[in-house]
Amino acid sequence: MDRAPLEVCPLCKKPVKKLIAGFSTPKYTKPLSVSDAKAAGFTILEKRCDGSYEKL
Ligand SMILES: [Zn+2]
Image 1 (cartoon, rainbow, N blue to C red):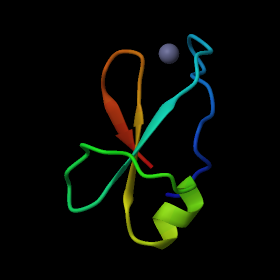
Image 2 (cartoon, rainbow, N blue to C red):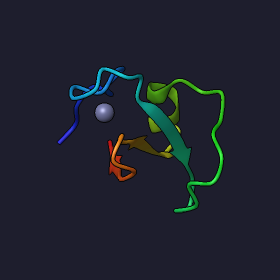
Image 3 (cartoon, helix red, strand yellow):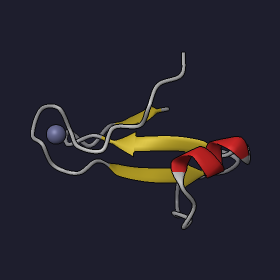
Image 4 (cartoon, rainbow, N blue to C red):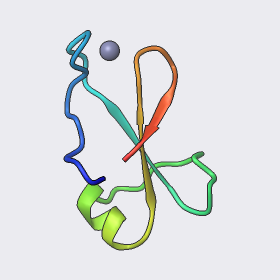
């Protein structure tokens, strides 16, 4: 169930915003790479252009 994070939205081609969340509080981002953050146990969320979030 692992996949590479998207860089751009496949629908609108805009850059995908990623949130790095710890303890289910997706309020802040951290200057970590996605792979580093996942290795550290953080949850990575991609924000979709429709406003929803998808967990990586
Ligand atoms: Zn989009």
